[in-house]
Length: 121
Image (cartoon, rainbow, N blue to C red; front, top):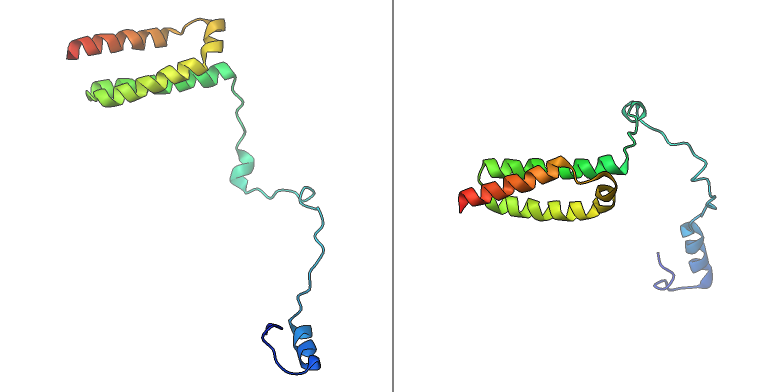
């Protein structure tokens, strides 16, 4: 019971408060010292480290794959959306492209998109 709402003598309120007091334990900084417990699945998987070039080129190829799929089903809206994302991804990979040269698959998708649009209109 809250001490603000109690009425009566002081001894009554002191006895009711003593039963309601919370015991707090001091918190120590052992968070970093405890080992992580991993399941067997997490222990078996190994982390694959890929270079920045591989990451950027994989991002470009995934976008190109979705553009080709949209071209097959004649979804021009999806082609436009993915083409815009491809332009942004190419901008991110610009430093790598400057070192390595423009990848053939990027030039090929630009030519294929041009042919596709000329065929439609």
